Amino acid sequence: MKGELKIYNSITKNKEIFSPINNESVGMYVCGPTVYNFVHLGNCRTFVFFDIVYRYLIHLGYKVRYVRNITDVGHLEDDTEDSEDKLLKKARLENLEPREIAQKYTYYFHMILLRLNTLPPNIEPTATGHIAEQIEMIEDIINDGFAYISNGSVYFDVVKYNEKYSYGKLSRRDIEKLIHNSRELKGQSEKKNSQDFALWKKASKNHIMRWKSPWGEGFPGWHIECSAMSKTYLGDSFDIHGGGMDLKFPHHDCEIAQSNIANRSEPGKYWMHTNMLTLNGDKMSKSKGNVLLPSDLFSGENSIFKKGFSPSAVKLFMLQAHYRSTLDISEEALEAAEKGYIKLMKALSVLDRLAPSEESTFDVKKWVDSCYEAINDDFNTSVLIANLFNLTKIINRLELKTESISKEDLTLLSEKIRVFIFEILGLEQSVSYEKDRLKEVLNILIEVRNNARKNRDWKLSDQIRDKLNDIGISLKDGENQTDFPEL
Ligand code: AMP
Ligand code: ZN
Image 1 (cartoon, rainbow, N blue to C red):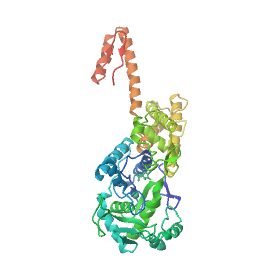
Image 2 (tube, protein in one colour):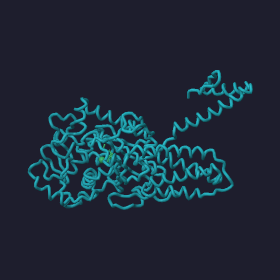
Image 3 (cartoon, rainbow, N blue to C red):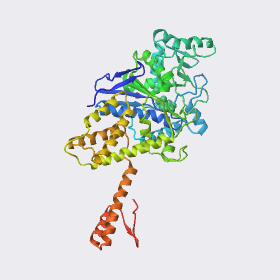
Image 4 (tube, protein in one colour):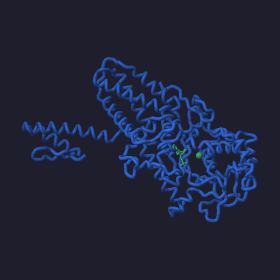
């Protein structure tokens, strides 16, 4: 029933049957956030998607080690030598210690991902906690002759690497052309070539985040952090390496180059990249300043939209598009997702109340298979969710008794719909929907009790009041009516 998982591998540009290096266990590394600002909704799209990958691999029975790092140093403003570390710049602007900045935004990141009901990774290493491992890896690359020291910094020699390997093979950049065009820059820089990237940067006088190294005091480059942390926890080669599309170049191509030299192997077997969340067609990004904060979107305060949306509806909105397509956010799309979410919750509760018949008039197993087929087809959550919505129509017909379902099929359907909605998509049971239903039940009880009072059936009316009181719901009788109790 579960079928065979196929993953689109960004490096081969093909959908491939997923076959982990060590049959039963899976190692997955996802590039985490740079914690110099609030995580935005675009970032969340990427992390929500990899949560689905994690959840589904667990569902398939794999023992998964999911590593997602925190980039708390080394993310430079740009690639020039005197470029400033973004975290350090923010610390200066907010008048805080760099560690306070990292802590503040890591905390927000965790809070938001928890509200989005994503599972925490198994290991969440920080770049600052793995300086020794990074230094060791840089030394290996220097010893192999693919990096050089220049004015206290260390650079990866892209030209030399490209003679033996193919630099930029993931993003398929025309590196020869880039290298050729940038030759003229030679001599203007401490780098041999403008394509060379920093493994270690010398700290300037004012640079607070600095560590001792064989090349003097400095701090690591961004790319080496992920290579060192993935190697530490997942080994030289592991199964899945993920991140947003914008990380393909230079970040992931540089990781591949570093690992090829230091480990003599490719880091990830399957590279997965999520496409961008956009606002009015523009990529949502910190640098563009068009970001939506998830907390504002949930509360509806300070939001560009008129009201708030539940985290599950936001998630449903994100997952209704395939992860390799761009997705534009709008109030209408979020409203549709909120309605869709309530529709799913209602269908679930109708399903719970259905009485089975002798036989089924629709093929439940076929429906379940089609859901697995969708998710197995490179995590096509878009088709999976369309299948769920189709099912809500059938559930309506089951309620109206224009369709029927056998006991065995009802059990299977109730189990599998929950697997898809809660276990794999990670949506939450709607609290407000449950509350609405509780209100409906209470209204019925109040009506029954009012009738009892009219008929002077004090025994029944007292019984209802006392039993409700026992569970903390107190009814207050006015002259003509009973007030609706506080819940
Ligand atoms: P950052 O903190 O900028 O390094 O980003 C963390 C993760 O979010 C990376 O995997 C990025 O590729 C991803 N990301 C950034 N912007 C977007 C966006 N607009 N849509 C989807 N993913 C994004
Ligand atoms: Zn990374």
